[in-house]
Length: 263
Ligand SMILES: [Zn+2]
Ligand SMILES: [Zn+2]
Image (cartoon, rainbow, N blue to C red; front, top):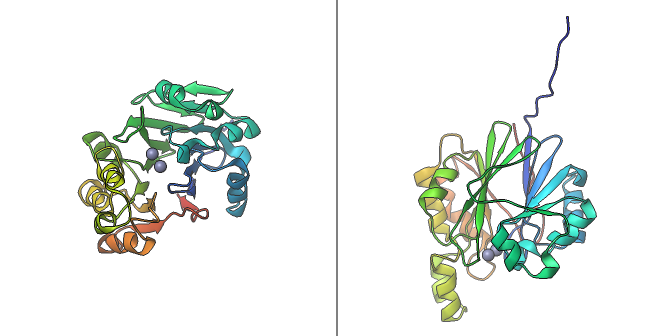
């Protein structure tokens, strides 16, 4: 008798290679393949961090760019070239990007149109942020759904819907409202950060979890934490009321986060 055995890929690994205003890159992969959402740190550092975490760079098949801000894109072109992998942008994001961030090997994606890389299905969707065509992502990998949801000024119904499908999420907790309002930022920056096209506060992120998390959600990686208008301790403290229900972790500007394995 002939048995046809298809290898079942059911181990998902996720981590933030970097998260914050000085650079963002989020890794989502299985046993054989992975993608990066953003490559906002330089190639050399990105490779060092993959090595630190024992992640195999040859598994990375593509980079998806969330928006054209430098902290999400500045290492993308070189990473694409060195790893021999394509970068996917929306057309508007590509056109708005500086030439030095445009890769030779590239393709386009559109919000609300899933894009398939091997066994990974990427669901991009529009978000509110002060960029030309910014997107968040839900990544369907095996039976799991991973959210990459940072740089968001306002929670809208699309975000609520996508978030509610996640098993794990990189979720922005950018600023503490009091710290921002009483802090050193000039008025125009305070307004920008807290506007509907800025960033999510600790409170907004917590509200999203409290109201829209499904029973499947297990892991929350607090992301894009401001070094000026927030502290790691404060962000964690905000989530302490739900830390028994969820595994709440921090990402970092300075080093790779813990690699979370989801079976
Ligand atoms: Zn950013
Ligand atoms: Zn941004």
